Image (tube, rainbow, N blue to C red; front, side):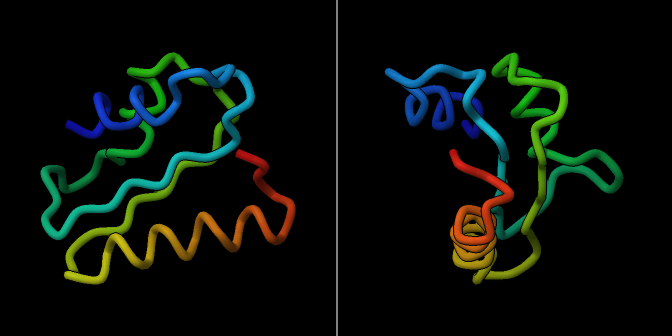
Length: 79
């Protein structure tokens, strides 16, 4: 579902312009793997794309959005 949602969100954008992927879920499917990295790989994004998972809380979505906003505001990500 995350890959399909991200692909829809990127429609009309150049994938090479993506600087970061933030993944959020109230539950987590993996103990070690990072879901954001798997999404980035499935979307064939650049190898240097920053990735971060936010999980294990009902506030995971809010935390991921806040991290994305902060990354853009700080200039470490543009898109």
